[in-house]
Image (cartoon, rainbow, N blue to C red; front, side, top):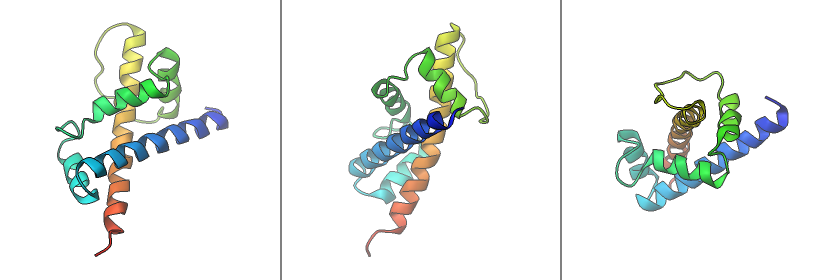
Length: 121
């Protein structure tokens, strides 16, 4: 992956994480409850990681074969989970979303833990 692509992916990940964390902190009224909710079940009511990932792929125009390949290049070293059978395009998009959602969840937990540690007492 070229350096400019790495930078673009970094911006994409940072922006998605920031948006997701902000949404969770607002919805759960602070980082502690948000962290607890996202760790218990990333697909629980009010968290909806998969739905957020779909939306952010749409927002950044990555919900296509080229976008999936861009994301997969950045995540080439991550381990693959099961992907539904279908066309190559749909399988690559699904795989990109699965892997990105896993990374987004990891970064979200890290950020919420930091925010939780910096709360005024």
